[in-house]
Length: 198
Image 1 (cartoon, one colour):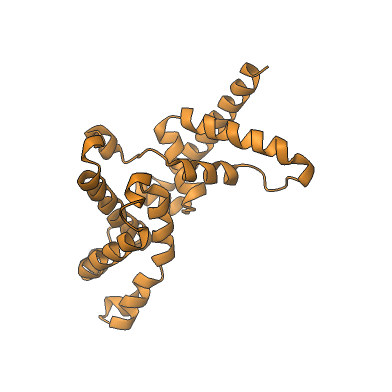
Image 2 (cartoon, one colour):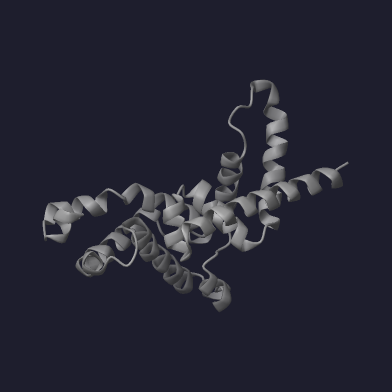
């Protein structure tokens, strides 16, 4: 970062390239499945990195937030722009865009459910695990968007609490509180779902 601030071009390129995989994962998770049919997430990453290259000097001078959340913000803005352009018939409401919480594509919801489940299941537990995975997915759909978002950022995008704080514009302690609250609500939904299924 310091060498990049000093104008070292290879350091700047290395700084941006070092986050390429994380950006691609974030974009793949957040991209509407109808967009994926038209646009490859790798192309979006290239666009974001080109924008970051143009704005890097300004970022390095001011450092308004940690580096990866800044890159992620550029990616987020690009995804919103692509959705407006390509999915005109189904624009997100202004309130939803301001809040910054998109619908979660089915594939991403499945991955999130898997990551939230215990990794200790034995082969004997496979059927129970599949049923639980479905219940977790249904519960995730019923969570408030704010609760689901903190779980997506932590468990799907695998951001640190500090990065989540930068993305959401809140303090790190508030991230931990929201995460705990979201997990409790998810547990309650799972419990209620279990009771309803009896």
